[in-house]
Image (cartoon, rainbow, N blue to C red):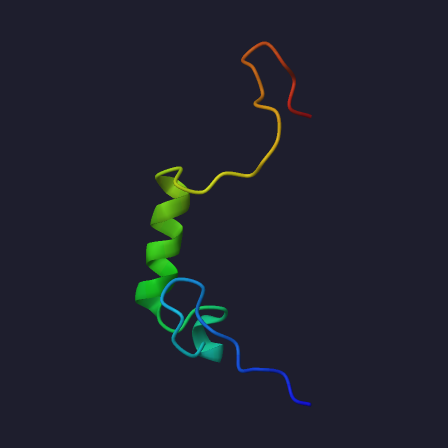
Length: 54
């Protein structure tokens, strides 16, 4: 039983090793923009301004 070919997490097209795990630079940039626009979040308790993150 073989592993399925990896797919781009943005558009689901076959991934390209040059842009892994994405299929293209465009999808890689769309993913970065989504992170910068805070459309993705890491679950957890928010850090308050008076709390030390480290």
